[in-house]
Amino acid sequence: MKILVTNDDGIFAQGLWILVKELKSIAQVIVVAPDREQSAIGTAVTLCQPLRIQRVKPMVPDVETYSVEGTPADSVILALGKLVKNKIDLVVSGINQGSNLGNDVLISGTVGAALQGYLRGFPALAISMGSVDSPYLDNAAKLAALLAKKIDANALPTNIFLNVNLPNLPLAKVKEIKITQLASESHTDTVEEGHHGKRTYYWLVRQKINKSTNKKTDIWAIEQGNISITPLHTNWLNKPSPAITDSLFSDFFRELQRWKAS
Ligand code: MN
Image (cartoon, rainbow, N blue to C red; front, side, top):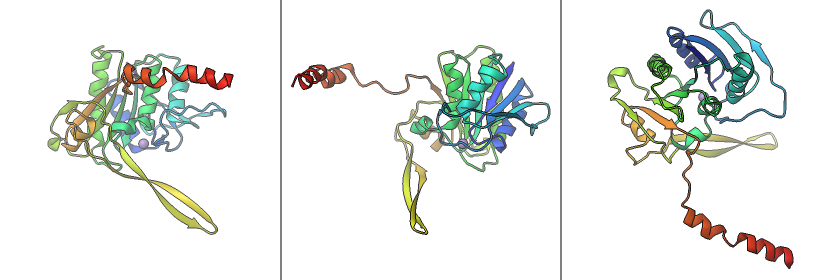
C-alpha cells in the first residue's frame, strides 16, 4: 500500500510526523505538504503564480518528503499529478492540531486537501485532534492506520471520503466511535480592531465552537467524548426544495426580457 500524507499545519508540524511514523509501519509513505502553516485556507488552488517544490530531509527516516510553496490542495494536486503520478492507494491529511467540525469543514485546509484526493478518485481521509497542543496525537495516528487498512481491503464505499475528529482525551476516557453527520454550527469569528501608528488593523478571532443540539452531529459526538467519523461527499450542501427555487426564479427570464425591451 502507498499512502500520500499531507496537512495544512505545514511540513514541520508534530501531528504530520506522528501520523507518518504510524502509517509507515503498514505502508509506503510519501509526504507532500505546504512549507508553512495554511490553516483555514480551505481547498484553495494556486493558479496565478508558479509553484516550487523542494525535496527535504524527513523527520522520520526513509520517507520521501517534499515541501511545497503552496496550499494543501496544491500539494495533493502536485503529488498526484507529478511526483507520484497517481500510484497512490490513499490520501491522508492531518493530523490537524485542532478540530474540524460542522460548517468549519468548508474552510478547513485539512479537509480541503483530502477533498482534492477524493475529487481525483482516490480514497481520502482528513484527521484532526481537538486541541492545538494535544498529548494524544498518537491515538489519532493509530486510528488513521486502522482506517488505512480497512480502505486497503476495499471495505469502504468509493463515493465518499472521511472526516475524522478525536476529542482531546486519553483513550481510556473516550466513549466510542460515532458515525456522524456534519453539524450546521461552527466557530464564530469576531473582529478585533487595533491601531498601529496612523493605521487601523483588524484581527479575525475564532471563538469557542458553537454547541449543537442535534445528537447525530459531529459536534455533539465530540462534545460527549466520542470519536467522530463523518462520511463526506460533494453533494454535502443541502439542496433547497425544487418547489421553492421554481417559485423564486420562474419569472426571472420574463423580467429580464421586459427590462431589455423597455
Ligand atoms: Mn491546521
